[in-house]
Image (cartoon, rainbow, N blue to C red; front, top):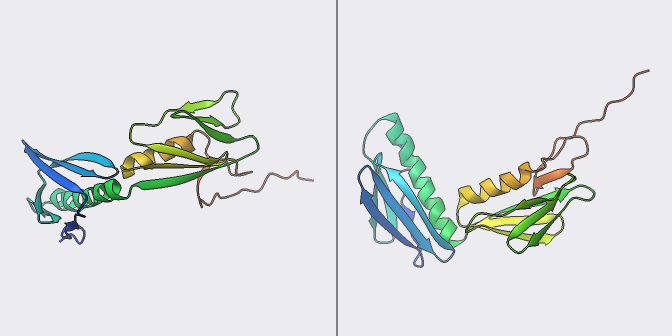
Length: 183
């Protein structure tokens, strides 16, 4: 029995969860102060909304039914937390001349290339630049926040010799020693 799947999800008073049955899937819509998120759950699980909680029951005993039971429970819990509190990833830029700035809704990065990198974030994602070397990505969708932060980091990953590049806050970069001339 799944230790995660059997736990009920408590729904706060300012969050609304709507369930709509379609052939083969259940459409789950979660609305809250930070926005609205939708997800389709396959018929591996049965989603039940009662009082101020959501419960999931598996519809079979196969390995995939058990796996989806815990997965969908976690995804719905992340949606509830996202529309209530939101998610945030902090990034820092290390390197001489490396900087970030916001121009309207566009993020402009100078990362040592011959050109500036312009990045327009997806809808419902906010990018805030505290100073030229610190920025944060926030929004209600946990997966999308992580994806945008990873995409910004991929523009210039931290290199192992000097540590220059874009990294997550408190990320440890393994440093290598430089090559030395042999006698």
